[in-house]
Image (cartoon, rainbow, N blue to C red):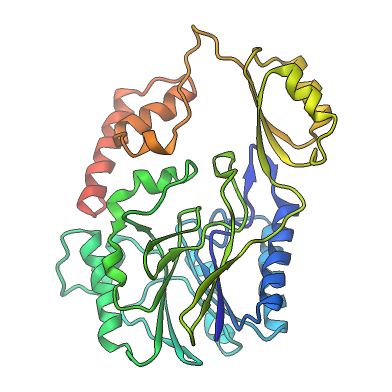
Length: 372
């Protein structure tokens, strides 16, 4: 059996107030193309199907179309809720859908039963918090989220048939995962991080949450987003992961889109000169001038050339109150307070004592793995 693993589609997402409607239609097309060309039997969507709990009708329509098209091709779907999804809405009519090989898990249950297909058993583990596990297992004592998460997977593995190809589908932050600059929430939420050891015993773990495709263990993989959803993700390859449950082989397929995200950096005249021969003027573009300050006049000039210009920056005045972008190498060395202060300074605001107090209380509760 051959399965396609993707995640973090984020239907309904926009960047700098630019809806990604057309691109997300292409995401659907690329998933279906990969399914047909690679003889895929089932598609795994490891969470964050939507960008927020409540989305517009267009986003719902694109999700509906993908699932319907996969069903019409006889392809099964195995999907879980992520931290951006509304679990109850995503899993609406789950029992009915499961009778048609559309399996959707919105909330964690005390017993995670396998979906048996071919030679594989698939276990759906939707995003959950510490309180959820305590409520499901009131007789158990957990000191932190790591222990709670490991308890969930250990219960699954205790009953798993080791003669079959066992797959875990989860949406979480695994320690050692590679953060992109758009993964701020994962960095701040590391109190909910888990070790890759929690998945030892599974033949493959299909992860969602982090946006770059990569392994965090020999058999534990983030598929990443199907499309770069922030300028910090430009330059990195976007792929779908394919798992062959018979051979155990793991491979990737690279989708192709009509436009991508690009950062164009340089001197004003240099960028203008090169734009004359630019064959991809419809890309989503960020322009960073190195020789001039950003002005409305310059912005309008570049907007005529690049209609999807979403970000425009220039030289930074020496006396301006600014904060440099949070690069991944800096992010790992920053405390939660430093990240919060950077967030406010980017907006030229001061962090009040009231806000500090509430942030400290929330941080302490997250570190304990409980909520007030």
